[in-house]
Image 1 (cartoon, chains in turn green, cyan):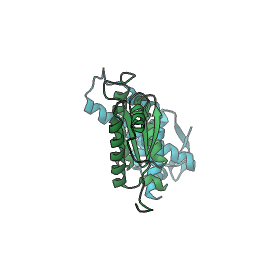
Image 2: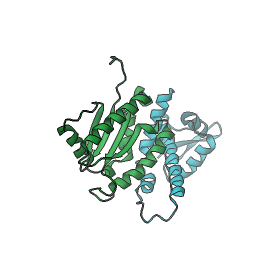
Image 3: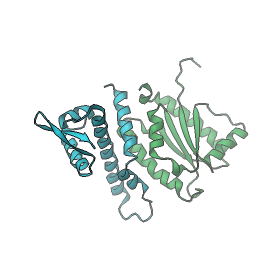
Image 4: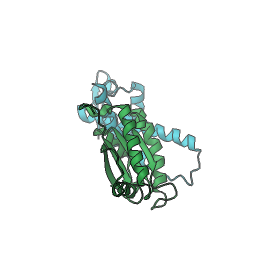
Length: 139
Length: 112
């Protein structure tokens, strides 16, 4: 690996009940995934305010991942549906701002899907690497 | 202003826009009990979000540079003057801005 190879910074918002537990399982199961991800635990994906996502991009994140419970499995019944709705808005807003919408991902991970979590992080890291550094990184 | 800097300013305005009641109200409505078609709703809501971003850009420019005319605001934000005028009418009605004198036969606007 070249010294100056681009290493993206990915902020992952994980819900406490499913995705974070999935990340925890990935760790205890010794699944390897890239270290580019910075996990932020939130109680529910519905807690993720659009300003959190925009602020992450504003302060230099190359990608943002939102991971919540599978539809129908939300600990708070419909938090993930609320997030899904906001996510669609956010994609529109990102393209309006000139940030590639592909830098933002929403995925559903259950507490038992440690392998899926590790695979997702690999996938997101590769995709964001392909996109290159965020234009806001230079500001 | 460089392109990333412009993007950063717009992103800052978007962050402020998402803090406003108008946008939060639109985003907060649950999917159930929605009487209008999803597509129509999305288009309306997207319009509101984009409008609010522009309004926050206008407010940001006045806060940064002091009272400005419509042409100056258009120059500072890159938004067309007729659109700025529409935003100013709305912002004035909401009590967010007011006229503060004149410059070259144009009103100067300040934030309240």
